[in-house]
Length: 217
Image (cartoon, rainbow, N blue to C red; front, side, top):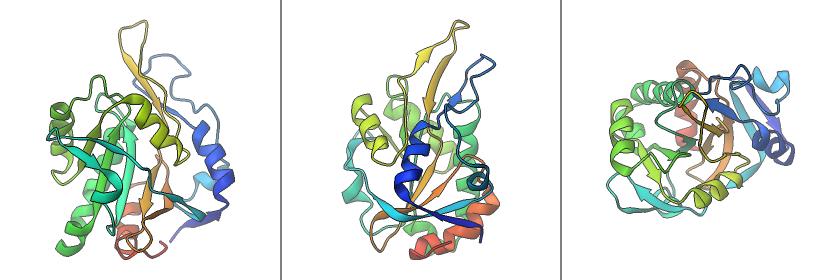
């Protein structure tokens, strides 16, 4: 499988500066603030030499209940993504690709896998609206919302930068956020594989059987 092993320190620096604008109308709105190397962008899976610790996040799920990320996903293969429901492109495509790939897994592996979507636009993404949006993708997906500062701090521990949503001149709202998906091993509960926004459903379908087992893709 395509992969790249890198030092996490260098990756964090690049990933934290690589933001995607979902919904901007300016010519530069879809350009990343900083770029990752061309070599890295050609790889679907980036296997980290120094895995990330799972964020210590306690947020609100789509039923309105508190959700302790570490506790609820302990010992489970987990994919975490930060995005927002009003995004017209990257976010829905990413979640759709994961949903398609999940359905290819054996039933037991589907039940084991946790896919967590944390909103970067909590002001608009209420538990109800988040649940409705994710339910159309895959009812098993977990949606989390809460205080923006808490979400931003949690994302930062994974090298993912997010900015507060802002209103554009045309009335549209833009949420700048890193578009990386982090996979956490069920063996160590550490984030050991990173995927970029260009990852396809086929890429996920090939890798998820190994992710479920905590193996390197």
